[in-house]
Image 1 (cartoon, rainbow, N blue to C red):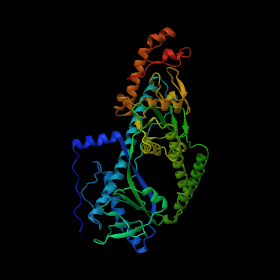
Image 2 (image 1 turned 180 degrees about the vertical axis):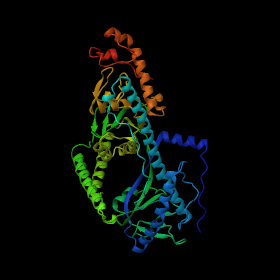
Image 3 (image 1 turned 180 degrees about the horizontal axis):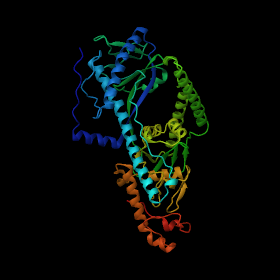
Image 4 (image 1 turned 60 degrees about the vertical axis):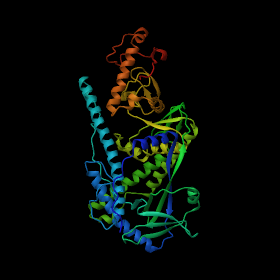
Length: 498
């Protein structure tokens, strides 16, 4: 008989929190995963017992995932049991915890995307009102943002994110196998013992390590796989006075630094492969729709998924990892500053560009940057990305028109010009330590702060501009009526606002 389901633990005391904070200042703890361990040494009867377990576990996890996603309150992994199941209390609790993690990620991404949509609507309304006031409505072609409700997560791959209460990894005393997995199953009181045999590279990775209590079991292509993990403490090597290097994320180049270096690109061969695969999937989708109209059963319809697309996705991530490793290698003593990127809220007008955005896996870049920096003991920090590509580093003026094309940045007010990605990386590096900007809760507050700094720049340079050229109306600067070519950088350069 299993013990009662565990309750919510007590909160850490103030002294314990201070102790953890002191440790974080001196070292970073990273979790390394040892993946692709096949459970092929087990006999068919044991694997069939695992299949029976996941056949009950996965639907229960799906029920709690849907419940947490639709609930008004935040997902709680200590939620009281709601649904009836044949699983033990321990496995029931593991299913709730796994579902809570999935739902929390879903709700966070959806909330960020919806907030970005609301800000786009406000920006659109402001641009439309300005166009109406200036009589430019016939030429106003900007589309009003629309919101499409997200689909709830559907669990298709059999995965069990287990803890030590249901899956225990035991060191084998027999030289034939390396470990034994003791797995709780539907047969109460009779746990399943599955042998684990490691490859040579698995043994090298785990040599001298202490395994974590959590394990992951998943099934792909009819084979069960095991994932083990262990913690590693990496001391911080970045000095407090280390130079800051801004890192901008993009499709043309995966990474562009403020030191004028570029790493990786989705253009070229990968873009051509993606275009070919996209056209192939579109043809399959048309054929599927045609056969569905003719009454062909759903199980016999051709799938729009392809192995080529999966291989391309893996290849893109490998190229991103290679680009990140090269960046870290070129800046070993620097402090990396990169944008807090929210890919879920990024949208283009053209479907082709949205397809390229999805295929380029930009959301993988910040995660890989954080991992690579932590692995090397480097300091890496995120800053607000709002308007980093539109803000002028000289006068802080923010406008979409500052980017006449994808490669060029040219300020409409002061005429500052530079390569767009390099300028964005320099802007991100300059935002490190900007407490006022970090305190902003939304992009509208960020824009208001930047425009306030722009007004301060105008007031500070008013006398110099009047002495250098014709008078300018400082309340509203029209770049068509102002000539800035004769002003030198010395006249226009000012310190960044506090």
